Length: 252
Image (tube, rainbow, N blue to C red):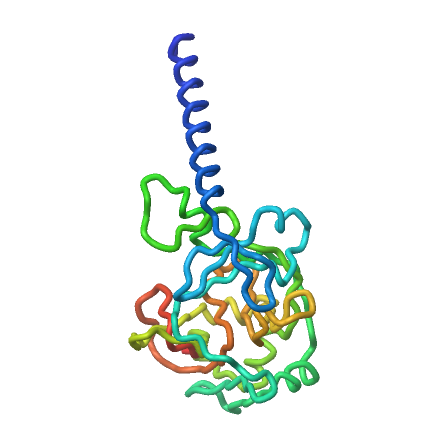
């Protein structure tokens, strides 16, 4: 059994650690650089190429985060502008019996619109406060936000395409790309897409996220699978290695 002296020393150590962490966090906050991107309130700049900006804590006080204060997260540096009027969601692949090419208006009018309130958070949120330090964008506390996402269910789109029962994975393809192509993809498990009431959200609180259509939203799933400016394909093949690969996205 621990002695009273040992307990007091342990408590003092925990208090000291808390004070050191608080001082480090305050130091990081003091060094924050606020930058106003087009259409955004001033956000905390963490990187410029590709752009990564976090939401100030004051803008996270409300139950829902304003769209113009929502954090900006990109892994890939080549970011095209997408014309919403000309944009199409391509659903294709070996497992699609009826390949689709859907406009934004067709998604709005041809499918049931659903909404869900969900937190979107970068897996690296608070990375800048980690001890020991780890590589990556040095986020503070603001790489997250809560929004009401509105759109269509992924499973409804896949059913419209006549998805083959032997298909294994959904694969999303974003229009952004790395400077040097690496052939990477994002591949959420198809079983979850069939069973869940997933919201393939194209709007947050009635507006496009970062003024661009399409952001996959699947509550309780990792956000890295939600590609912006995306298309969906289907493929039959054996399940390969795991992880997030970030260039190609289809359905396997």
